Image (cartoon, rainbow, N blue to C red):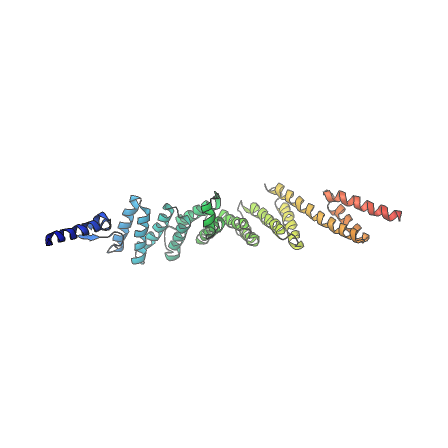
Length: 325
């Protein structure tokens, strides 16, 4: 009976360890002659831990490889393998489709190990990931909307990563394109003042860039959007008009000049309407002298606007009534 009890006891242990899967975490290591748990095992040296991590990486188990590379950083932070381990953490995040986390990990390579020989490669990877966010098209899914409540927008992520890249490597051959996209990201976020400042950086720092006239045109568009955002600000409205006038004068051969002229015409049409409304206000108030001044202003300054025709009609009506009286 006693033997039966002992047998049952060992069967229970066997079941707990093997059948339930607990013992499955343990593996026999011929090198050490011991049973080890790979999840918690740490190589005796940085080189050994690096070898463990790279071997796992080769199997395609990137989640496990990520864990192993992180062990190099945690237990051997000053080792010769640490810089490469930090880079591989970023690589694993990319493989696991976590691009923003990958960029942050790549940035740590530069911040912690500035002598790394992977500077340009990291900047290229950061730009590639930033481009992914910049060009990403939302599917409008419920899941995506829910996640969006707690995370940065794609424009914020792209801008942050582009800024990492340009700070890391100011003389990067695509730095002007990166600078343009930083500005455009802020523009897409509705931060027009910041966008204009970033577009200005491109114009002033990359004098031979083919992106300059585009940047200058977008600065004018930012001014236009500001005028729409603050419709009662005469100062912002006039700034928008001036921006397009300056662009047309400075870049007469630009591919964007026709668009700029169309936007300027729209602004002038809006301005002529504003002046017309002032004239109409004075006319209704009985101040016909002031009304005539503003109607004439519409006719003289905006002769091609629809409001010029209406102003002529109102001015003639006022003059006729005055003559009859």
